[in-house]
Every structure is written in C-alpha cells, then in structure tokens.
Image (cartoon, rainbow, N blue to C red):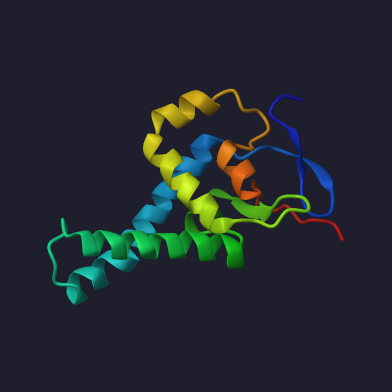
Length: 146
C-alpha cells in the first residue's frame, strides 16, 4: 500500500500512515500563532525594547525552544501537532534528543523549499531531523502495545 510504512517504536513495529511535510508545516504555523499570542503580548508589555534588539530575539528564541522541547518531551505534542493530529515519540531503543529535534527542525523550517525539495520522495514519514534526534512523528491515536 502506497504511503503506509512500518514505524518502529520502543516496543513494537506497526503499519502507520506517515506524517508528511505539509502536516508538519501547518502544525508549525498553528504553533506560531499560539506562541505569538502567548509570548508576544506579555513581551511587548514587560520588555520595553526595540524589536531589532538582540536581547529580545534571544528571549523569543529561548521561549520557542522551551515550548517545542518541553511540548514534545513531556506532552508528546505541541498545540499545533495536536490540532493536526500527530505526536512525537522516541525511536526504538534510542534516547530521544528533543532539543536537537528543535534546532534541526528550526533549520529545516527556515530552509523551506530546500527542505521540501530534498525530502519530497520520503515515503515512510521519517525525515533527517527525526533520524538525528532519535524521534518519530506518529498519529495521535497511536498507542504502543505493552
């Protein structure tokens, strides 16, 4: 069946429909809207600084990295990922590196077209940042058997 692959997790191997780049990109857009509302308003009130100031950019980048890292590590999904119906789980017998996932995902997101062009033939839904961070994106309904 085209588009269905085996996804290896800590306990088993299952056939799952992969989470594609379009779904992941849309989830990031939802997360950006969410974070803009949650972080942007208080930041404008409590940090009276020029937006081009490096300190503000560091604060925003730090808060974004905390959001994505903690969202995936502790809750398996960020708000955007939940809205779009997928979560992040550790790969088989590997310790997940969620901060590495955030940094590589950040790079992939800002490379945009180059990321799409280089990964458009991926059928199993596991992209280079998944391999490097020892994580996988699976549908929310996925439950690893005991």
